[in-house]
Length: 271
Length: 76
Image (cartoon, rainbow over all chains, first blue to last red):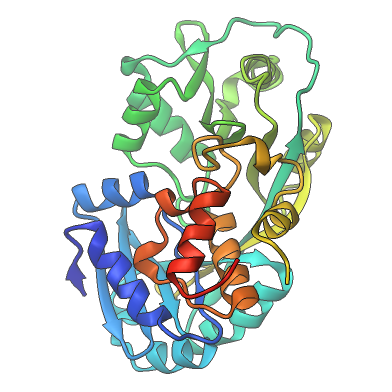
């Protein structure tokens, strides 16, 4: 794998895989700003194969595997010939509707990936009338960065839920994309969101164990809705097996929108 | 053949694409939608939109998408 130095290398590799492709398939959906961040931090490497391009992104103590391929056969051929799959702990995602995901799943399983977890996207449309939050909520400040990252890392699975890096946390705080609730002088909960025009995604919403059942979570999400009155479409990803979280999101008007993310891991990650 | 506006409406029925001049800035298309849109445009218009053209500038509004299709040899 060669280090990617500029976004153009990614687009060129995608183009080579995609040119004339009858059934282009990919799990690589980076927005430009994220792609640039990965490149700037030396996290992205790539490799071209016949009819396919593979990318690896370094994340903590493992890698994310991404592919672009002309079709399933090209993917199957390229991945079977690729020795990198056993080079270290690795996860990959298949994102799409149920039938798209199930179509590609056997290709990755035959290559050696195993089903790790499954996420589903939930969405809600339009504004929601909410009462005032019971507790004060404010934008997170620069000093909250390490505590925010620690809280996210303690609450979510690094292999399955695309946790942010410290620089992403810093950027979110700087861009006022993180709400914070404090209790007893510490960060009790946070809500990390990404808003673009009329759409907003909750990336992480969590409360420290000590402060659960103290209405911290509801204060955060109510504040979030109140300050996003112009947004038309709210989305988030949730672990399909987390019934408590799904029930909570349903309470706030979210419903599955049909998009799923099947996370797979190679044999160097424990299931 | 479906128009670009009809395809967009199928992907994101909740948005009024005709009222926007910048779908990306307005948050009407996310990265998953973009891939779906490109695949649908490829199939509908019988073209293969180059990877290097899958950039936000080409998907800002109906005019830029139609211009991209024309560049790829389609007649939207």
